[in-house]
Length: 379
View 1 (cartoon, rainbow, N blue to C red):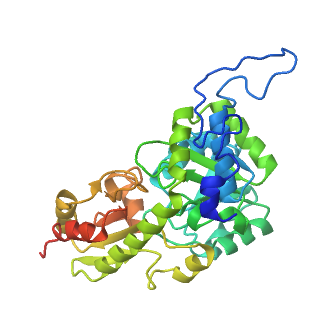
View 2 (spheres, rainbow, N blue to C red):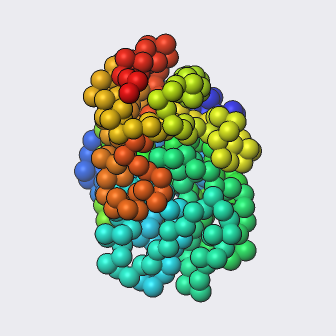
């Protein structure tokens, strides 16, 4: 069964007991036990709920995994996965990781004596040189947020296996439609399902998937122990969004390429970052490990004045936090997704005050470009 068919006719897309073609919402916090000596599959909804189970199994299948876990947010999924590690463990992390992940690592997990080293994972030698005796995992984002830097997943995963390390990949930007790291040998994939998976700016959710039962058991302990679970209603919304994932990603990435090409021609623009451009650093690597370029791009203006004028005057889009929705969302990383990273660190990474991130949606691209044009000024 191919991917688009799985979205509509996967294992749990039809309710076996009723024939319902949409995910049933089991809005129950507890479950009656018919035999006190032999509990049923469900007893308390934090530990398990049929609606959540169906979504978790459906998504695991799409990622090429065996075990899925749905969380109350993307950062809850990421933090829960990191929580499987222990005091004195060491993790290597992509240096330009999502700002929420950076905050969790530097403000929360450092309290528990888990050690982290941030490196530029575009160069595999950087990862290799950062490995220590207590290193347990490599945490990657590719393409990265917000500069769309590319990490060679095959090389990084091979290095991890040679050193008995777990590979974790944040696959939010690509979705399983465009990239499936587990099929390349990664151990865990995490998502902010708020983004392309849900796709409609109406739900906050996170997902994690693995093939490994031992890892799955550890993630479940955290999910059940911390209780940062996804509610049945939100599980339904995520499942509903999944049905149109293919068609949304196809149209959005087509629009993204058109916008990226247009931006490259503008005098006011200093640089465009998009994996679909031949001149993008890592273009060939990304092409070989994914099935498309995605719907997110970033670009830099030449001046701060132009940047602020654009943000205050752009039309036919939403200026907001987040990405991956049906509408085009323009974000300002230094005040939004990466505001928690100290300015000095941001600028070292190239996340400057003139950087704009765009998640391209389903509008007619001519209208998006027209809205951009009105916010460009020649200074």
